[in-house]
Image (cartoon, rainbow, N blue to C red; front, side, top):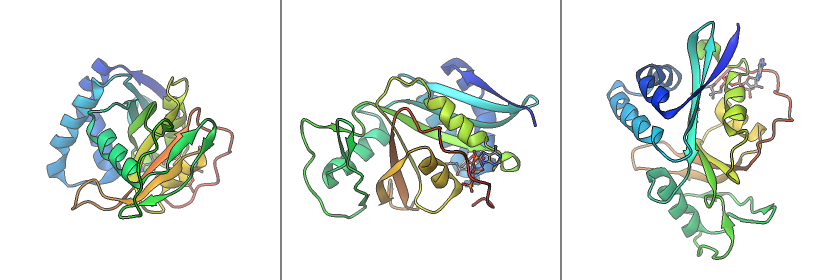
Amino acid sequence: MRVSYREQGPAQFRAAIRELVSVYAAAMNPPDRTLSGREAIMERHAVSPGFRGLTAHDDGQLVGFCYGFHGENGQWWHDMVAAALASRSCSVISDSVISDSVISDGGSSGGAVSGQRTWLDDSFEIAELHVLPSWQGKGIGRSLLLTIAAGRPERTAVLSTADAPTRARRLYRGVGFTDLLTDFRFSGGEPPYAVMGAMLPLDASAAPRSPRPSR
Ligand SMILES: CC(C)(COP(=O)(O)OP(=O)(O)OC[C@H]1O[C@@H](n2cnc3c(N)ncnc32)[C@H](O)[C@@H]1OP(=O)(O)O)[C@@H](O)C(=O)NCCC(=O)NCCS
């Protein structure tokens, strides 16, 4: 295996969206009918401010990708999460001190804390991270994640992932992400998500554990 990583500017990324969505489909196994919608979402994301895309290749074959952008008001994910964090309060950052309260959907409510910096004030939103199944568990996802977040100007990184004990969740925790929301529903029909946040830079110091069967 000879894995190389390539930066993808917005134009390159958009030109590769079909291929990227096929990696997403292989990794996530979503219903086929959702794939054209996924392409449209990625088209929109590619023109977001501060967009950064990264692909992984093994001997020229695309085997994984990751991308993110600067979070701003008016973006769907950002607004959904901002509202949930504000209504359930207390995930604020005070200088270097982070409230690590985990807030579950339907949890107790409280007001947003004005005058304090929150997780989303200056955030890099990591929208997608996927590796083809045959290449999973070899450190590629971790490299994509650490590389895409390296050198970012934002204060925090945020993302959402299935609220379950998955490989993705372990990977995120291993580089410093903590749960901001659990059992969170973006829409009624979907399974629960965890919203996670980390201070930047991510923690690359912990050695990866020996691999376990994926989930
Ligand atoms: C989640 C995902 C992106 C992680 O990428 P990955 O390349 O499989 O992850 P890594 O190999 O970097 O790390 C995974 C495991 O390999 C181990 N590992 C890391 N570096 C390694 C190396 N050099 N050699 C062997 N194993 C290694 C890690 O310790 C980790 O072990 P764990 O699963 O027991 O926690 C990938 O598995 C995937 O695409 N999953 C399906 C889609 C998905 O869930 N995407 C995320 C949506 S939020």
